[in-house]
Image (tube, rainbow, N blue to C red; front, side):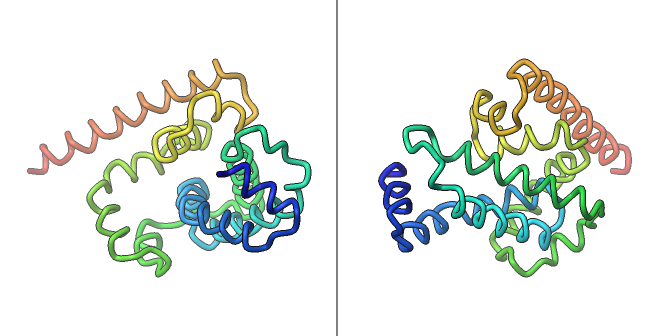
Amino acid sequence: MQKDIIVRIKNGDKEAFEQLYNEYIEYALRTATAITRNKPDAADAVQETFIRVFRNIMFFDEERPFKPWFYRILVNECNRIMKQKRKVISMDQYLNNAVYSEEDRYHFEEYEDLYNAIQDLQEINRVPIILKYLNDFSEKEIAEILDININTLKSRLYKGRNRLKKALLDIKGRRAKNG
């Protein structure tokens, strides 16, 4: 199905691009928000990603998987915007952002400790963790998206998981201590 949509887009079918957009927009926004830690920056990154996809789809080989190519553009756009802005968003700003539905907020609160721990990771570990566990990419796909060696990726995932585990145990310990 993905191949068909891409071929149609290459042939100038605007409805096919709209279909692709609708398929990817929600996960792209969530991923970009997790990477940039800022909803407006995430929206900018996603918008620029779709513009770049539209402009460059003619060069995409439809025999290859589209999703890693798309997310590589998205991650690069997030990084570009973060380099430009270098700002931090508070969790209150994130939770009060109107783009997320009440259902999203409920699920966020349910896993607040995990999300906080992920957001506290250094970017080098945070982005691979987000792509692997929140977007379900394979290690090979993530290495391709981030343009790094697969062994480097495995090391970053390992260290990221260890840092997450330590952070979650620290949170649990503080809660037990404060009772």
